[in-house]
Length: 70
Image 1 (tube, rainbow, N blue to C red):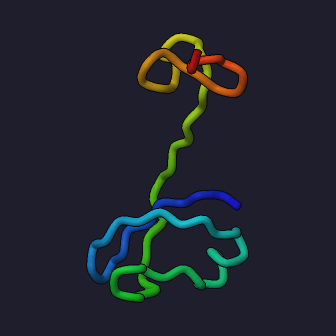
Image 2: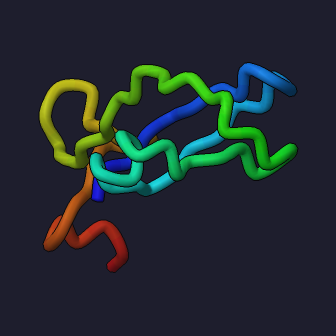
Image 3: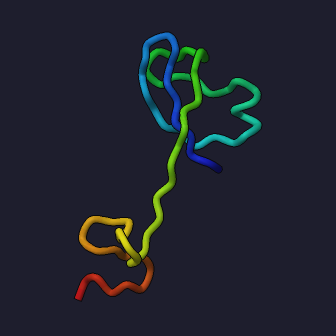
């Protein structure tokens, strides 16, 4: 399931939710603060781990098998 960011048009609350595309299209997503279904989907970015340029994480990267804890 994709993680989407939302803003409630009624109360202005910003939140994230894991929903299916079907739930999104059927209007089943509602604001956790005021229960309004008047929401706007925002643009989500995704995070990646790794040890390339920038690392993706504070402290120099990581990911499975990086051995950061010795």
